[in-house]
Every structure is written in C-alpha cells, then in structure tokens.
Image (cartoon, rainbow, N blue to C red; front, top):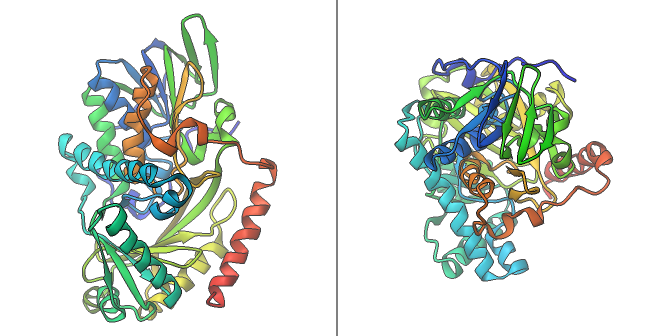
Amino acid sequence: MAAFPKPPAASLWAAGAVPAGRFGPLDRDVQADVAIVGGGYTGLSAALALAGRGERAVVLEANAIGWGASGRNGGVVSAKYRPSFQAIASRHGLSVAKRMHAIAYQSVETLERLIAEHGITEANYARVGQLKCAHKSATLAAAVADSEWMRREMGDASVSVLSREAVAAETGSQDFVGGVLSTKAGGLHPLNYASGLARAVTDKGIAIHEASPALRFHREAGGIRVETPGGSVRARQVIVATNGYTDLTGAGAPLRTRLIPFRSAILATEPLSDNLRAALLPSRRIYVETRRMMRWFRMVDGRMVFGGRGAFGRSDSEAAFATLRRAMVRTFPALTDTPVAYRWSGLVGMTLDALPHVGRLDGRVSFAMGYNGAGVAMSSHLGGLAAAFALGESPDVALLGAGGFQPVPFYGLREPVIRLVAGWYQFLDAIGR
C-alpha cells in the first residue's frame, strides 16, 4: 500500500491558500452514525447535511483536506454535464432532461448557499458567467442550435450567442469564430473553498481525520466498521466520496471499476504585465473551447490559468505540460515569452455514461462520485443527496442513480484505450476536424 499522507500538489491554489487548520489522524476506535470516506467537496458537504439532520458523522481523509480533485481543479462552477441536455432528451425524453436540468442548476445554488451560510469568503466566488468559444463554424453552429433548443424546450434564457468580434473582444484571442455565453456559471479558489467547508464541518462538532485512509470495511451486526491505520470507526452507514481516487486503498474495490481516472493538467503563468492584463480576458469570465481535447482558461490574480485534458498516467507528465503550453500560446500568441510559474495535475473521475452518480451500493454503503470534470458545484450538491441516501431516503436523482453506475468493460485495458482515443482526438484537433 502507498504511504500516507502524500505531499500536496504544488499549485497556484496551494501558494495562495488561506492557512487552514490541520486535523490529526484517527488514533483510536470511535463510533458514529455515519462514517464518510473522503474529505473533498462531496464528503464535507455530506457531513454538513448530516449535521443539519442531527446525525453524528466522522470524516476520514487519506491525505489532507483538498489534496485530491477538490484542491487541484480549475475552480470552474457550472450547471452542466458532459452530455448536453438536448442529447439527454433525445435518449431519455424531455421530462427526464428537465429533471436533470433542475438538478444541475440546484447544484450551483447549493454551492452558493454553502458559501453564504458558512461565510466562506476566502473562496472568492463570483458568478461571472462562462463563455464557450467555438474554434470552427461547425462547432459554433452546434452550440447555437443547442442554445436555441435550451431556450425553446427548457425555458432557459441564461444563454446568448456572441459573434466572432465579440468573442475576440472578450478573450483577446483571434482563435475563435464565435461563442455562446451562459450567465449561470462562475469561478472560485477551489482549495480555499474546500478549507472553508472543512472549517464549517468542525464548527458543527464533526471530527475530521487527515492521514487516515480507509483500508477495509468490516460488516458487523447492526452496522459497519471502517478500518484505518491508527483506529476504526463503527457506524450504521458509510458514504464513499473518493471520486477519481477511489483506487487508493482496497476499501474502494467495489466501486473503482466503475470509474476511469483521467489526468487533467493546469498551468498558471507569472503575473502578466498591465498591458496584457488589459488585453486578455478583460471580462474575467470562465472560458472553455469546443475542441475534442477541451481546454479552458481564466484570469486569476493577474495570471493566465490554462487547463485541459491529456496528462496521461498516474503522475505528472513533461510532455503533457509542454502540449498544454503550446495550446496556450496558440490561443494567446502574446504569451509566447511569458514564463509559467505553476503547473500541476489531478485525476478526473470519468464514468461509462459520462454522468455523475449517487445512491446506495448496498444496505450499508452509499456513494457519490464520477463528476467527469464538472464537479465543483455538482459534488457540493450530491454530497447532500448521498447523506439522504445514507439515512434511508430515496431522493429523485433521475439518471444520476446507482442503477446507471455500471462497471467499465475490459477495465484492465482502460489506460491503453484512453491513450489511443485521446491521441486520435489530438490528431483530429491538430488537423482542424
């Protein structure tokens, strides 16, 4: 088994984090109503929901709060899934799509409520909107058609179409032919958000234990015992909230084959000159593009933060960082000579149907995971729903239920298949297809 705790990612977020309290490892046997495995957004929001219901919870984190995706992501807050709502309606019907739409927008409202309710001002959250930048006419036409469908069928008027000139003014880049702006999106400091949630959890009297990986689950009469290196938690229920890091220990074995960990990388430049700061991303929105190997970018504290998929394997990749930098300079030639100050990566939890899932694995274990790279708001919301499942309730989660969370066929071949598919996507993007 790998040693715990592991060192944190050397990210822009870690460099600018508000000092947070540290939480000692579990060193004895304790009892609780619910044991929560994973100290990211999902686990911490589940703990807050349980505290609001008068339940005793204990949070077990293998490393440190925010060590995983909750401290490494780009801080992009959006109400979306990987499949479009139009695609969901085509396959499952309009009523299902409308329920999925409601859940997506509830997720942003949940995040905003948690920040307001617990005073997490250090997260620097702002609903600035997200602009999808189209790199060719075909993807722009598809984005426009989708926005028109959303307005017509879902009654969602939060999106509008921008011309080539408007997108160029928004971004300072000539790389795009137009775009679609959604106002119901924003950005935050992801590690400070995680730390703020942790503070709120401890304020409710709930114990958090870092450096306490869940090694095994033991079924016992009337409950379940979670074993860690230094002690154990006996509880009625367990919530597993480990997402792309579910395979860290053997305790995740029943769920890990349902997830494909995919590494995503991020660069942050040195602070830009006043001229560049005025010319690039002056509206300070969140920006994504429409290429298959999707890139996203935003301005944070006068730095360009640029991220995307493609850092294959279990650790950082020099080749992936170099590819990402080339993409950044292609989009923003003015950054050719601007040094990169920070670069880091983390794991995205991908699923077979490209949707997150929440529900009960069995009578003792509930879960929420599989955010497919769009989990900042969704994980905050599904944590509360996982708490409801752990308490024996059955909330309406539409397509996000346990039934759709299926094992990945030929799981042992996942890494070479991912490399093959991603390489093909990179080739198509390179030739403009």
